Length: 103
Image 1: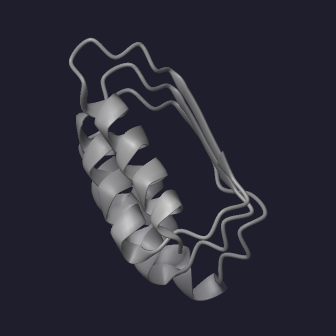
Image 2: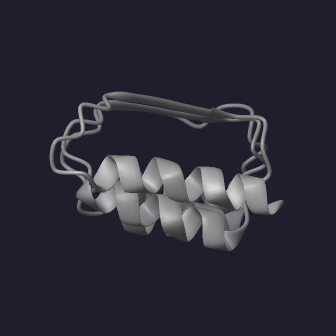
């Protein structure tokens, strides 16, 4: 992942964490995200109050990233739609996906 991509993920996270954020839709597409990037996004998701739709596509989401994502979604109460299509998520990640849905 380039430093630009990490900077982008930190920016998204920071916007989600703002008390007055009106960000209701986020679509991240076709970028490679490191574990640090997923951790940063997870921090934002945990605090997001207005985010309703989250689409993450073509980002080759692997187990470590999906685990970080699930950590952020655990306390999120605002997201009602998640699209993780076209990420080649492995069958072995089914337990993590189930945890996201259950939370």
